[in-house]
Amino acid sequence: MVKYQQIANDIRNKITSGEYVPGVQLALEKEMCEYYGVSRITIKRAVDELVNLGLVVKRRGSGTFVKTVENQDVKELSMAKQFTGFTETNRGQKVQTEVIRFDIVHPSQEVASKLQITEDDFVYDIIRARSNDEGPIVVEYTKMPIQLIPGLKKEHVETSIYAYIQDKLQLKIQSAHRTLRAVMPTELEVKHLHIEGLLPLLEIEQVAFFDDGRPFEYSISRHRADRIAFKTVSIR
Amino acid sequence: MVKYQQIANDIRNKITSGEYVPGVQLALEKEMCEYYGVSRITIKRAVDELVNLGLVVKRRGSGTFVKTVENQDVKELSMAKQFTGFTETNRGQKVQTEVIRFDIVHPSQEVASKLQITEDDFVYDIIRARSNDEGPIVVEYTKMPIQLIPGLKKEHVETSIYAYIQDKLQLKIQSAHRTLRAVMPTELEVKHLHIEGLLPLLEIEQVAFFDDGRPFEYSISRHRADRIAFKTVSIR
DNA sequence: GAGTGGTCTAGACCACCCC
DNA sequence: GGGTGGTCTAGACCACTCG
Image 1: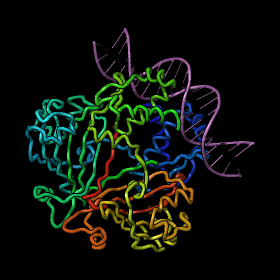
Image 2: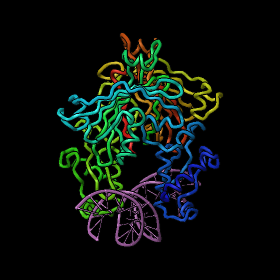
Image 3: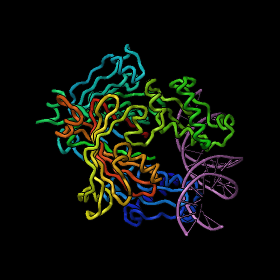
Image 4: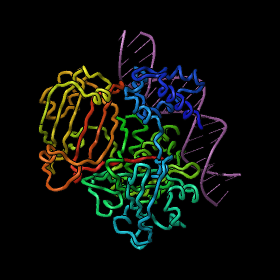
């Protein structure tokens, strides 16, 4: 771990532990330089991490202050944003996956466009229903070019595709572009999510990219609205 | 405008104009240093802006590459993320606001907690329905401590509260913490959003902060799902 | 091994806030 | 006017990729 991350973690711990309470001013950057024995630009890099997490604010001419947020929020924010699939975000819980479809097809024009391939190429066509300890959570519709993800087997689809991509194929996931919407469930979703009565779904349309800039996944996941919320922090 | 922003804009234009096409490698950082006549850390800062926008990827040992995204996405991503209220995001459109409620009340325990005030304090209690050229879009429920936003009048509520805060009160908005959910409309929402049939809403719960770290707004906005989607880019 | 971006330094000047 | 964080420099070394 590099210096600025260590320092960011240290300050973060001082906030979560209550050594720094909401509203209080942090040590000056110049003071932190001496305390940690690093240059000022490294301190700035560390504190900027906390700004992006939503834990502190910086004001030129004034100083750096702990944001006045609820205690519960502090805990959630202080967990570094992790970019992962469903399996990882539910780590520690018993995740069950039902594979509803696992085929290879030609992509629609829309999917081909999103994945920057042609309609003559082939993509995996995967539909999965996934549950955690609370019960059914989400139905995922996933399309991935077979050229980019060779050798995908049912056993990977039944557990974690992302684990296969990262651990077995040694490919690095760089980012995801997401669009969120509210939708009503289809009949298939009513069935697999065990929906009774009137319950909308939170839909997340996603294009995920490797660290070389190529898109490798187009997916639509539709989550039970009573079990999923999506949190985000916007700065500026 | 500072150097790294100018350089970021310049590179961004080269991407949107097609001078850099998806998948192509950008000039090396060392080359950019000479081209722009700045140090390498400034180039890095500039390119990092584009990484965060979702336009390019950087790989140590390889170089920097334009992300392979749809043309339409490039346009959307290249518009700098702006943090604004409803009025600003619909700039250029005819925004209509119907004020359904504009009162002063004590906050509930939940709202008091989010705004870090006590239940004995006072908050504005505002409900508005807002439309753009397409028709009704959103119903907003807003609570703001009267101490932080003195002098708020009906005329501001009818147009833009954010404009009043930033332009008149000269207060700076630093960030917002948001939680997104899918919900069904209430009767009030069915009426004001002119909903016919079965249409879910995209709910955005938001706590907004000043640049000194104090929360000044707790709001819930419920958007017609057929007219609103929420886009976001996650890196790493 | 050659070349890439990642991190870090020690110092400088600047824009802004508050007194 | 004194003090804050923001930007920028010129250079160094490191971790990683690829042929």
